[in-house]
Amino acid sequence: MQVTIRFFATLRDRAGVPETTLELDGQHTVGALLDRLAEEFPALEPSLNTALVAVNEEYAFRDEPIKEGDEIALFPPVSGGSEAEWPEYFAITPDPLDLDAIVAHITRPETGAVCMFTGAVRGVTNKEGEPLQTDSLFYEAYEEMAEKKLRQVAQEIREQYPKVQGIAIVQRIGHLNVGETTVLVACASGHRHDGAFEAARYGIDRLKEIVPVWKKEIRSSGSQWVEGSYHPTPEDVKQSSS
Image 1 (spheres, rainbow, N blue to C red):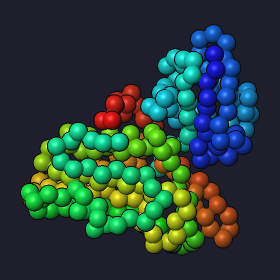
Image 2: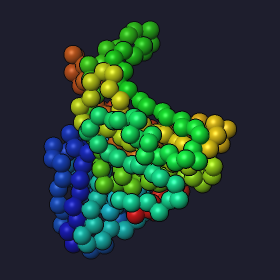
Image 3: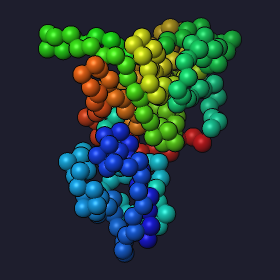
């Protein structure tokens, strides 16, 4: 059988190609595929123990079977319409964000509070007493899967904070300079005590765990991908609204 494997961030750099197609004999699991990739791409082997795997745009684990025609994606730990009663807005975009327009999209006459978190490119990071200069960041996403996971984060927010009304979650991609907005999570509610603050905090924390987005830090001395440490569990696998 034939499967397609896509590589992202550090995995793409190590493989030297953005994707490859492999012919597999007999039945294979994700774990067996990883072993085969270590043979085909020796430079990948140091990363395969920590690499995350998605099959057909959903997280997969070593003992899961692989079928003919499956699309497999490998990447490091991270960085449609809706049937929700309240308005929602999701985007993976290289474009600058219009914050007022996003707020207008997720509010209604019943809305009295909006809590918005935005992240920005930090130019100086104090690390171990020495300031570290960053010139810019480059963000990459497994876009098709990332959009589904943004919706999953919104679903989880609604489960935990039922008084939240509108929700917006946006991730920027591409080359971003110091001071530019990189990510946005906004939650609207009728009153400030209805969970909007807590929901926005949950949303950005969860985005950093399960949405396949990564960043490359670019400095005068060179550049490097920044990898996370969170590994999804079977409980993180949910069907998002389509």
